[in-house]
Image 1 (cartoon, rainbow, N blue to C red):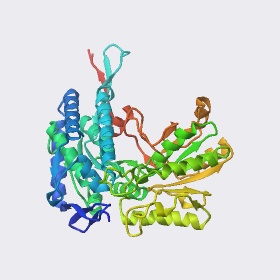
Image 2 (image 1 turned 60 degrees about the vertical axis):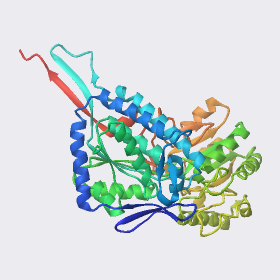
Image 3 (image 1 turned 180 degrees about the vertical axis):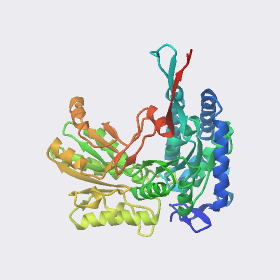
Image 4 (image 1 turned 90 degrees about the horizontal axis):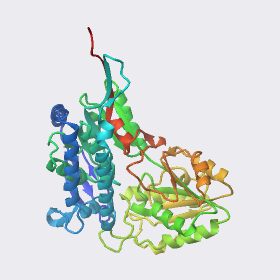
Length: 487
């Protein structure tokens, strides 16, 4: 139960019921050539507009999308025999997150969009100098790259698309947007709102592609930069394709994570438990910055584990279209089987599973439903503590000191986010400097602030989105050095 494709057709399968939800037909190579040519041509006109005009269209887009995602009076779309669905219901049926929780993604989407529009002028305006010598003038411009190919994931499609698509357009680029086969309609709705706000139709193009067609676009001469969010294997494939293309094509990569949390003896235990259950289990654990491993000081370990298990047992696993459901299926049967295998392997090598499987009878083999599981007696010889799970599974390991916790937190091929739970700001500051990750949280986790740079190290990727630095990846510096007086 996941999206499926052949050489011509892509079918999106709803994870919770195995039914086909949406079908797209793939283009042929000549169609893609025309799409890229029209985007490149549109960009040549778009770059002639002023920054103020582009920012104004960005604000109009935010207004339009706010109306689409208005929970009290949402716009709905016709899905034939399946009925009419609003944006949240569409997203739920495509990737399996409970409908009520999908509204939260739209709030985050609009928050990020608003911030990136608000800082656009300061990020993209010319830099001038007050210390020019007489007869000379200097400036630095931020100019667009041209055509940017954005490859979006299925787990948080709207949140990830907004990180690059809107900033790229405001910076003067054209965008070719490829959504995941699992969430194709998210890009369609995004484009509709952009076009309705005045962004030219050909400037933002949505394409549904097979892997060979994706590689073709990555290597196309008209594509100037590629933004990819997904797995490490997927990122390597994209980078390999880009390197094999003519010239030197830039690639931004936001990849996986195995994000750790460290609960110190002085942490607010009740708050840490609630936040870390949510950080590990929300969206069925399918987040690049989900908490996937927790290290707890030995003096509070037993109490923390007991409370964590009790909180986890409150989760209601079920049909994501039902209001009472708090955790839905993972994205596919294949993903569920891989997650179950990781848990089974850990148990076979000494780990203990603390959530009885009979609490969740619907989490049967052959379905995409997975028991939200808590594992103890784990160590770093087990995949569950080293390899990305991308599911509702957490390993909790006892540590005796800050030094041991930091060593284990850094013992990973990933480096996206990490969190430290303590009441001491001074201790946090000292420890944060030692943790190898793009973002370090104090007493929170699995949360993005659009004013902060979103970036990873190691196998979590490279490049930056969001914050004032988010525009740097989508533009280049152009220096202007003028000798005005030649007399």
